[in-house]
Image (cartoon, rainbow, N blue to C red):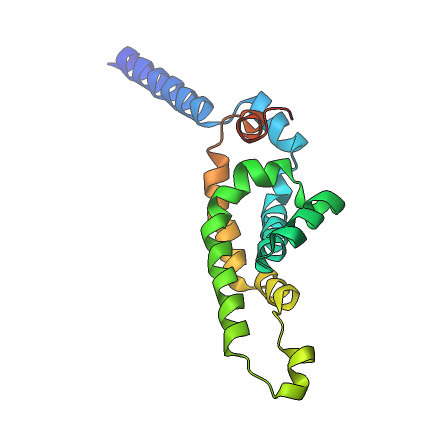
Length: 161
């Protein structure tokens, strides 16, 4: 009886070790996450949301083209490959809010030239600082943890990276 109890304890111990080791992430993945600043992804996600909001908020292809060409902030391989999928519907919703705000804002004729414009930057800045975006970034973190190879995801979106 003592021998079987000893064997059972050893089996349970080995089973626990096996389960714990199979649940941990590999050293390669840890190193890759470190090289991509995984601990800062929530902030980078919010930064990307702000950039997309500004980029798309004017709803003007010429402005969008100039921003892409002149400002490196808008080119973010990690953002394009990983963040943009979940941000697209959120940004579309924010663009709709900007559009509605512009439509609902009416001013007297003499003030239209000054005030009757879109408030893209202000709106996007408020969105950046919103609790809604904070919650979304925290929620997305769980999805990011499931990514087995970050560079593969980037290469899917940007093959030349």
